[in-house]
Every structure is written in C-alpha cells, then in structure tokens.
Length: 157
Image (cartoon, rainbow, N blue to C red; front, side, top):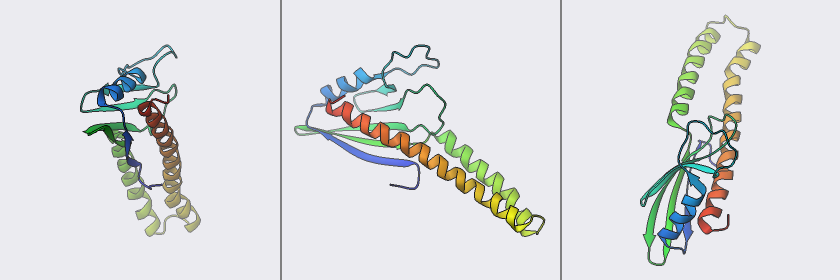
C-alpha cells in the first residue's frame, strides 16, 4: 500500500468500449448539489468516449473521498481502463497550508524553550496522528471504490 493518497491501476476487459461505457453509464449519474433520495446510482460524475471523472455517492461528509479519473485505451479485442484515484486538490492544498501554519508556530516555540519538552512532543506528534487518520480514511474508501469499479466494468455488479 502506498503512503501518499494517490493510486493508479489498470483494469483490463475483453469487452468493447461501447459495452464498458454502457455498464458505467448504468452506475454513474450526473453530479447534483443536493440529493434527497437514497435511490440513485452508486457513483456520480461525467463519462465520455475518452474517459471519465467520477466519485462515489455517500450520505455523510468525507473530504477524503477519492476523485476517480479514468482514460480508455482500445486495443485489439480488449479495452484497457487507466484509473487514477486521488484526494481533491483543494483538500491537499488545505492540508499543506494547515501543516505549514501548525509547524510554523510550534517549531519556533519549541526551539526557544518556551514549551516543556513533554508538551512539545505532543504538539509535534499530533499532526502525524492526523495524517494516519486521513491515510486510513482515504485508503478504505479507495479500496472500496477500486473493487466496485472493477466489478462494474467487468459486468459483475
């Protein structure tokens, strides 16, 4: 498993591109700002002849939900789908800003000796604990989406 919240993989199917597009269109609906019904497809986003950009529809807040981008490559008697899953760029920018702000304040205070060493360890280590929590949240969603997407494209779901 990778450390950074980014995953790329290839799904290979012996089916033609129109069949793959039909299967994806059956499980992906257009993006909506609000959903009041629980009767919907499992994914939302856009699909075209060249690729797709989708995300799983959830009924709770999760900023670490993977954004799934795919690109189709048609070869003789098979279709390759190049898939990339990553965190939304805004979330990555926010995390980078937050770490810069946090360590920009904690490290100078620690180095000047204004904070006891036991407290400094907590303040330096807390963002690492948050990274572990973010990592687990992303990879649990990414593994689920990877499995579901493979099943959809293979026609098993």
